[in-house]
Image (cartoon, rainbow, N blue to C red; front, top):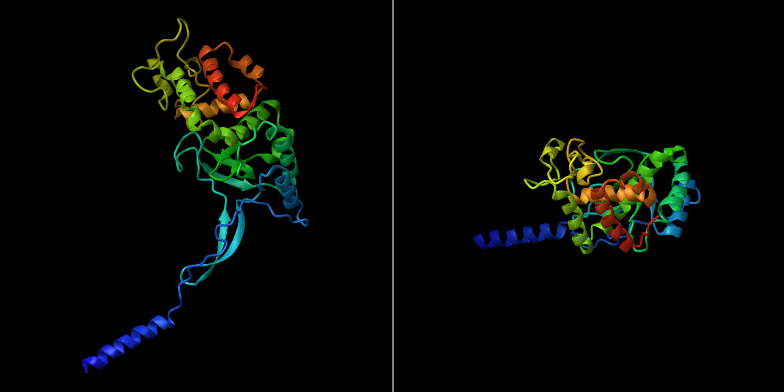
Length: 305
């Protein structure tokens, strides 16, 4: 009797195994390169983005969902995968998921895209040296971050906002706009390990003014701890070499040396060198830090403008 029960049990196990759907272990083309633009002559925007991609090698999108794919999970169930650009990476040497962050954005009007592409080709791409990798560009209408107004570096894209306003921007706005876009595109290159010594000198030019703690990521109230300035010079952000407060909090000094360096990068690349010096030449600490960032830019292949 026990023998019969044992055999019956084996039979049921084998039957269940035979009836169970075989798990899927092969996933063709799931690692495809999504960062391309395929032509669609019937859509003027996609066709324009395709021509830009063919000319520059940089894919431009107007939607953060850049493709779909029919897939099957390991249990054989079919589903649709939506490939989205990742905006979760933050610049300034901060960890992913830390400020600055993209809070929200709105999709742009397709009619505004041709002017944005023309602007990128005339004002931005000529400044970029060879070897700088721009994985993609996402053009949007309104960009809401807690740190930057016009451009943000994501994990696999550069988000550029306010594209409808490009044709009518005044000169002051154009300076900031250009600087922010180039900063977003160049920040990873500037923070390469090969420039660590230069960036240490850059940070120490400011750190030396507070000996009881760090000058970075502190309340601007504590600038009263500053020592070593020439007689008669007040302890301000610019006096100790900061161009401004932390972009994510106007009551703090820049959070990190890399954020500080990115602020310099933005200010330098939005202007000619003569314009930068006209603003800051009377401040010796800022000019020391300017010359250090300029060393990096020259090594990257970006000459004085």
